[in-house]
Image (cartoon, rainbow, N blue to C red; front, side, top):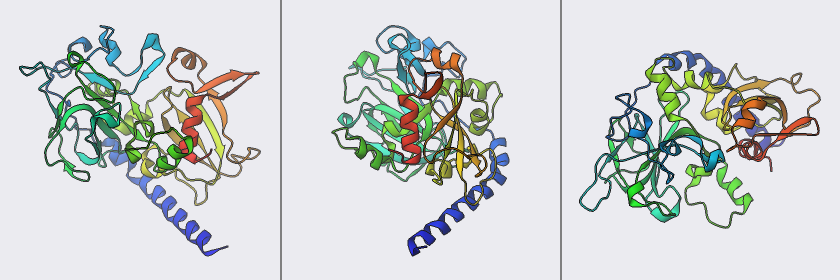
Length: 347
């Protein structure tokens, strides 16, 4: 074995041993209750009022179009977060709401140029005290709080910006809002994946490009959290509804599961032979099981195989295409293909 291969093998073992050690603290992390602050001064959610009192519609007049999921274009357009409308405006009619950090965290990305993204000016925080260590994203800002820098620690409730309607597109002033996301980042290899797709424009945002971020429904999580059905994000992920389950025979260890070991179902062997991954209807890979050689016997290397699909759920959610039924069997749809490409570096 060459020196580089030996070094890679040692590193892999160190990483996997860290996975095993992390399993021991999962129960403690899951038991701690998330401390959360609504990211704007709008008190409607905290007071239990209907979504029309805090969601900003996307032009249709229907407040549900400001929610998460397939809420636009008759269900065919996916929206990654929620849009929160302002409660106050200045003399010019511009929103005047401060934006707050929803939880203690670390600033991972600041995009201060409105035209560089559909998000406009936006901030991404990561929350390493949580398990999994999710991100929150705050978009369409009018300005970033002075002195806020990448790498800085922020406290729950700290002002990080001002609500606006910035975007590379055109958001009318009367529909100004905070676009708020909660989710996970797919891969640290995203810049290479992005280059391989030849989109024709530079990636201005590194790992924190929207194409590398996968959100979950903030309002669903918060409803369960308020009802004390869940205390933590680990609790919430454990209750997600499976939409697609797949297996892949591979020696690759995605950095996704290194960063989110709370999603493992059992300790990882020193040399895993593959993975069984369960995704919710959006494609979020919320459950990971490492596989042995016997588990992947007969599976071709680096060729995912779908094991199970919730056909009813897949048909209902038209804004995502995870699986297609062709010639008597399920095959990967475009969104699942992209997920596998990003996670495993398979082109």
